[in-house]
Image (cartoon, one colour):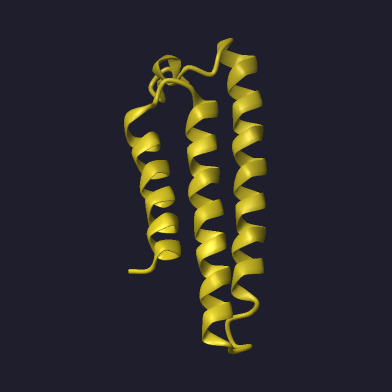
Length: 98
């Protein structure tokens, strides 16, 4: 495994660990998701550059577009949650109370 592959896989694993273990605020969960998507985007971009083919050249941009949609939906949910519940703490969210 090359050092760049190790760095991107470590960044993805750290984002996943932060998402799994540090779940106090919705904003921190969204930041961990964005870190995971950024590491995936960079790894996919370098992978297409290493292969030297044009077949996969659109896939990093497609991933980036989906990441932007995910971020906007997450921020909209964050604003809606903060308005209805008063905070973004994940312990206050309960689907049975809605």
